[in-house]
Image (cartoon, rainbow over all chains, first blue to last red; front, side, top):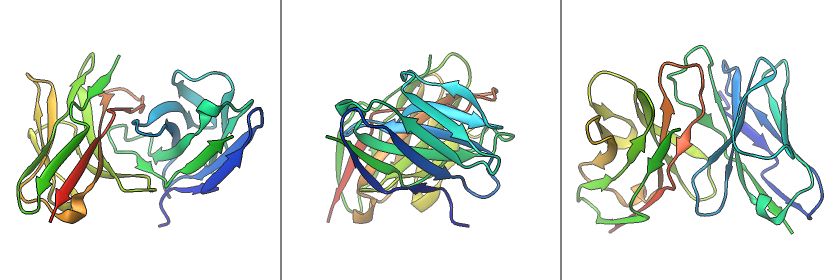
Length: 114
Length: 115
């Protein structure tokens, strides 16, 4: 079992550009959540996808959007990048049916906006 | 709304000594509580969780945590620290008995275990 995988590992963009990050959940998991972890901070919840729909959203602007595919993999898109979007982006997966289960995190994508 | 406080930015302990990393929480209902560890340039690794039942929870790598409802705390403990335990530790909470899986994290506590 490969666990949660994310790509790319690192990414450098300039202000105003758009970026797409990808996540494959752990085998058997159908729910994907995305978190932003700024330097020196704890992860902040962006949104959660289940059955290809956004189910919950944190306090992030509409520039942040996502998608979930039929195979449960997910993408995070960020438009009009700002310097403040520089962070580690973490994907986490879990089985929705067992809501008390822990979320499994991927290694993250380090985004740097110049 | 849920929130988590980790009052110590860093905890220093000598190898072989017991360690405690503090966490308090606020949630409007019953909590599910979690501890995760993060090593440099890595994602978060699950250590342990409290869902219900025994207030003392045992987890991976010899870690344990005690749920105290009256003090709204969930402190992480280990009887004998190892240098390899040096890492960043996060406490997280979510509201129990719902389908929502949003985790609210604390700001993290850096644990430094000296030889």
